[in-house]
Image (cartoon, rainbow, N blue to C red):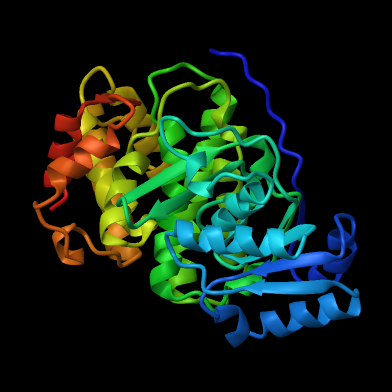
Length: 389
């Protein structure tokens, strides 16, 4: 196995009634706050009023940026950068799900440079050396952006959706109150569960040997999502379900389970092309693609990982033949995603046809073949898209 460094200094306030610490934590960074949020759900659940009251009581100067989209767009980032520079913002408070937090990350970085924020992305991406401090209040368990160095931004003009990792993008403080996810719809809850599961699977499915302990951690996280995802869909105010999904979301992608693995992710670059062009929900795209990718990758040389997944996540009888376990594991995953969570099964169901499959496959491999669990060429990616129709 490869050696690695793990360092994730995000201070997390987890559980009910933690927002009383917001003023104290923001005050460590300054008095001028950019409050960034999405389409207004935080107002409907009363969270906005609570935050404004706390900020006013703390004597903060507040500038607001609302309307950050799902699959956040570069124009929202640019608006945030402009506000940060105009008002000499000290700290960004991102309230929402991964889209709001991702956008806030690149606002924070863009506020520290003179070039356009889109230049942080692509083959000739400019370095991210500094960023304003970011504090998050999470309202949707899905992307794990509240506890990682990554973000993904869409550019509708170029039909690109590109990700970037950089140490300065790491939030300083994150508030994780599971009750703030009670109002999340069953559909978005299901998409979030699929996203969390995919983050773990992208690391778990590898041909590289790594720590047994980390495999067991990932299997435990996946079992947690499989158990509590459907409960949260059926009963949105089940605190145990919401809490387990929220904490699993953070630990799925904060780097801990990665260990020394060096393989690229596979389903995420494929899905980013779907949501870049068709603006579908990221977790839904992952749910549709992942079982087809698994079927495409299944072979005798890779079957052992499928067996471990089936036996340790879905409790399939280990005495069965290996290929039978592997196929049953994929079938169990499909039942979880499409029957228990209720997500659409195919690209056709969400309005995606064959027209742009070749273009999307080419762009998914814009930096070369995807060297993941199985190396994927543009032709391989296009076949997986076709299997998903």
